[in-house]
Image 1 (tube, rainbow, N blue to C red):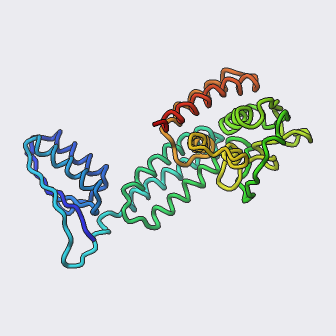
Image 2 (image 1 turned 180 degrees about the vertical axis):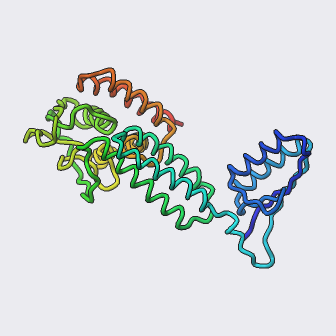
Length: 311
């Protein structure tokens, strides 16, 4: 295996530049061969990261050189990059976070789980030789996210193996749509999607319990509903697939809704959107008015995502 090697030295009195170099190398996932000698697997991005550190070192009175290297003795340096202790620390944090579920603090646990997901993804990015530690942590984090999402709402639909069936939008025009009251992100986004792309005349019924769903209503986002979680997809994503609405902008919106509902890959917009929707839910007691207000958020996101793709 080939490597990139950084050899550097800095004046001892330049503590600021030394700390900056150390932080940059740690963020890049570099292994330490010995004091002043750092190693990364051969890749253009890794070479660029080491060159940036070298440039900064030289600009601050030090000396630094980047080399391409290949061991002649067949030595395997993969062990130098072990992330076992870091994944272990993250696994412990996941365990501590899970304990919060017993204290009926599921919404707070969901927020903490999103922070843990971000930390996990950052660690995965520098886990160049992934093994059981990464797999174990990934499974624990996924279980935490699913359990916290379920605990946050007793009626939250369970993920199932049900296949997505293509639906003809013409059969769903002018219908009554039913879901659980006090809608949160998946139901809010799904209601917007229904009125925006499927049934412009849709009327919504807000249920105290899924058992109260009227027979002729189209149920969504509860167990047994016509449209709900399917496999790894949340209800919004199921609707996209069912009605063949899988444009790049809507799929990107689906990733955001999925993250806020169940966790997973966290888009940069997630924190701001979550804060706005949480404020709306707190301020607006009427569910119909809440859906209308939230529609503006999703419409704005759609326009922004479409604009991002414009030439």
